[in-house]
Image 1 (cartoon, rainbow, N blue to C red):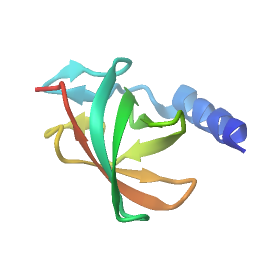
Image 2 (image 1 turned 90 degrees about the horizontal axis):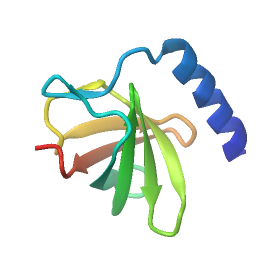
Image 3 (image 1 turned 120 degrees about the horizontal axis):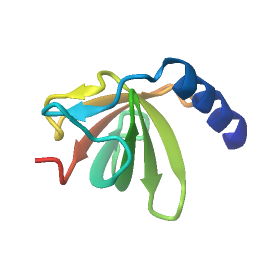
Image 4 (image 1 turned 30 degrees about the horizontal axis):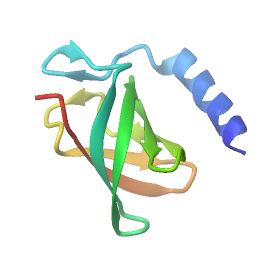
Length: 101
């Protein structure tokens, strides 16, 4: 199932993700950042790593699991206040990303 979801997102990235995720006008796509993520589905905080890719981010959890989130906005104004959505599980997330400021 994750492979199908990954392929689906890959097609979306290729077709519509022409803009990069940015912070203060700088492209932040590609590098891995430490973050704290809050899931509105589980009402829990997680220490994670995130990798931005345009309007999406891949979130890596401890133990090797990961998920893809759609960013509400690819132009990030506050790295400690990023909202995103998991379309696979229909859950809102809040990200607090370190290392951008």
